[in-house]
Length: 461
View 1: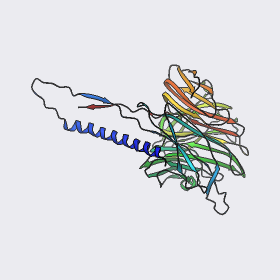
View 2: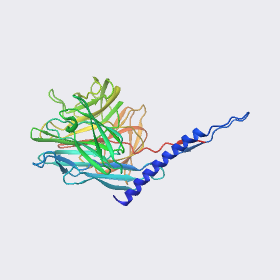
View 3: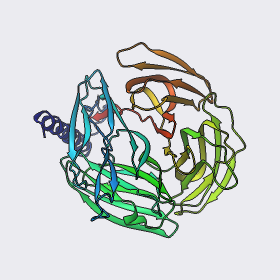
View 4: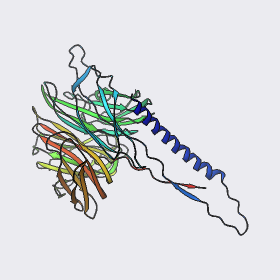
């Protein structure tokens, strides 16, 4: 651990402890300061607005792409199959690069994470993304993902634990505190739980089959105590004896009744036997009636008729998006109870195929910094669910800006440069995603907001 990292992490803890002390002082003031009421005298308590100092921003990457069972004497051993290319940058702040251990890999590589320190009481505008292209006898395809902040809860909506799938949960703990992680697996066979401990400064690689054996469409809830973690899913597929794609998929934050999945691509027209694009859904707590709509990424025009489905609480469901002709889309989901969702897409069925999962995109307001990983033909999709057009300003770091008008209830597509960090500015609420497509290559990921500024606290004296 470098000296600079130790100072910054300690600073983060100090700011957190200071904020808690301030909150406690505020509560104490309210309890003990009981005013006396005197005849004919009225007083108004003095109030002061205090804005806490924002914390550091930590972004953790997925790290090396794992292969399982390449050692004939150890079928469960994991080794490095590909080292990702990482693109990172910062707007107006210094960016520190650090590493954490990956003890589950036989060759003992490290996983990268980044630290950004706030400037002038504003959150650090930093971003990073990674991509990897692998061509080997047991793994083939292209994968890309953004490096994300750790959290106390996330949901992995994707993957499988059936024949041909070698999917691995990647759980990274960049903090100096041990994290206890609970995995709740939802599947056709019911719900199961397991738990593991992630030491400080460590990433663990846990085969999905350990908790979801035989499940073809599992959903995993990841909850944590002790310290936040970054959870992601590495997927790979073999059909018969041929590798048929790889993917890196991030977790979603929480279930919601309204979701938008951007950058969802139909490469092939659906047939009676197979759909090239599918949607996986889970309503964790209550039965849900769900309406699914598709819109063209270029302009937001409706694509096909809405699909209405009813799903049972706690049981994952899959819906073929057979109404999609080849093209790029956003998928809108409205549900009567909170759901999580992700869309699966593939370039082909069989040898030479690649696949990717796309998860829901959150709202973006103000300034957001994001990275476009290396990869084929990258594009950014912007959507606007509001009733008025929104002007967005897209700027590569160190280069000229581009202004884009996103129409009301519409969408826009922008070609972007691979290996570049951008800022996106808008007054209204937008959603965004990065997508890639090449020969035997498909990938994408939503754009997530930069850490929010701290909200003022009103102190009453």
